[in-house]
Picture 1 (spheres, rainbow, N blue to C red):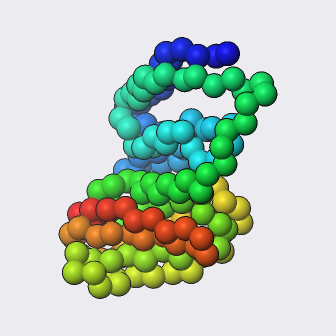
Picture 2: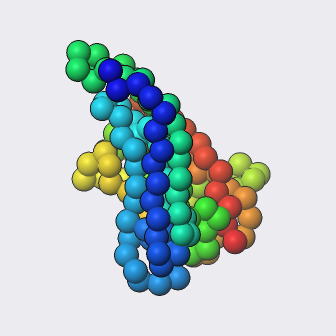
Length: 152
C-alpha cells in the first residue's frame, strides 16, 4: 500500500509559471494523473512563482484497478482571458463540440472539433467577443459539461 499524506510542489524562479501569455518563455502544463481515467488534479499553467498541493492518497496499484468512470473535466487557461483561451477537455472523445454562450444563453461561438487524440488541447480565439461572463459547454456523443469563462 502507498497510503499517506503527500505534498506536490513546483517552484518557478522566473515567477511566470509554466506558460505566461505576456512572454515567450514556453508553453507547459502540469497534471497529476490517475492510473486510469481522468486527471486527479490539473494545475493552471500561469501560476506565478509556485504551486503547492497537499493530498491524501490511498491506493494499492498492485492488484486494484481504479474504476473507469465517465468523469469529464474542462479546464480553461487563462481564465479570465483576453484574446484566446486554451480548452482542455478530459474524458471526452476525440470528436467533440464546444459552444460559447453569453449570460443570456445565446451562442456566441460554436465549433465541431476532431482532435488527434483525447489529450489534445483546443485554442479558442476570443477576438470579437466582448468583455463579460460566458459559459463554455463541451459535449461529445456521451458526455456534456459546462464551465464559466470570464473575458476581460
